[in-house]
Image 1: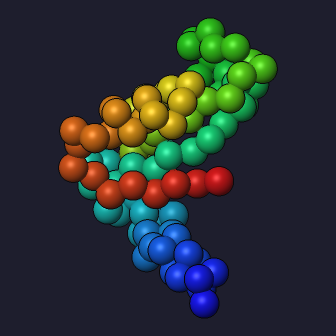
Image 2: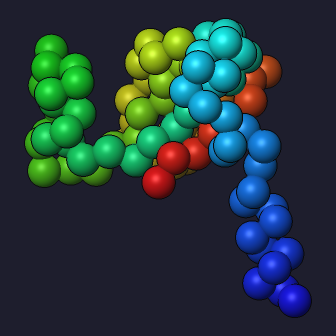
Length: 91
């Protein structure tokens, strides 16, 4: 029973949007947070000079614009705390 409850908590309606539906929400309404390796991030944002062997978290607008990169979940949470947005976590 407890396992079912935990799954329900993570089954947010935003997880089931198509790419077009997600983008239609608008860049100011929803962001997604994704864990990403430095080597993958350096191909997306080559000018950042981030360590390719490290792990990062990137916050991206619904429209696909990178908003911030951090080296910890706490830094992302701090940055997002003052913003009124829906958040989708990608794993």
